[in-house]
Length: 140
Image (cartoon, rainbow, N blue to C red; front, side, top):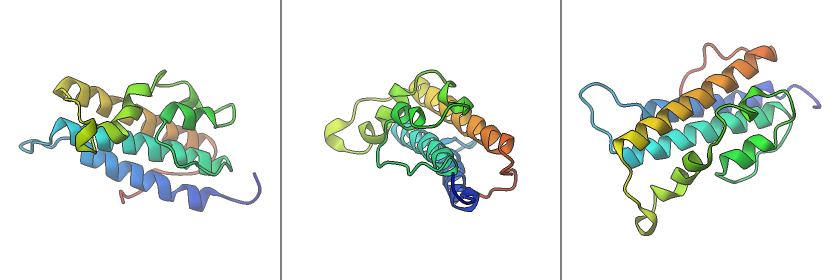
C-alpha cells in the first residue's frame, strides 16, 4: 500500500455506524423489517469497503458482501467471520424496489442486524490491529 490511506478509510466506518444505528430498533420505535435489513446490509457493505480502502484496494460498486471481502488481502479477520453473507447481500436490493420485495420477517431482520454488528465489530478490530484507532468515530 502506498501512502497512508487511513484518513480516506476512516470515512467509511462512520457511514457504516450510521447505517447500523438506522437498522437497530429503539425502544418504543417500530421500524419495518425491510428497512432494518436494508440498513444492516449497508452497514456491513460500508465496513468492508472501509477495510478495502485501508488495504489499498479501490472498492468496486457492488453490494455482494462475499465478493467484497474476498478482495481483501490475507490477514483480515472479516474475510472469515461471519462465514456467509449471501442473504445479507440480497437485502441491498430485495428491500428497495417494489418489484423485488419479498416479505421479510422480524427474525430475518434481527439476524441481519446481528450479522451487520459482527461485520462492523470485526472490521473495527482489524483497523485497531493495524494501528488505526476507530474508537471515537461518529456516525455519518
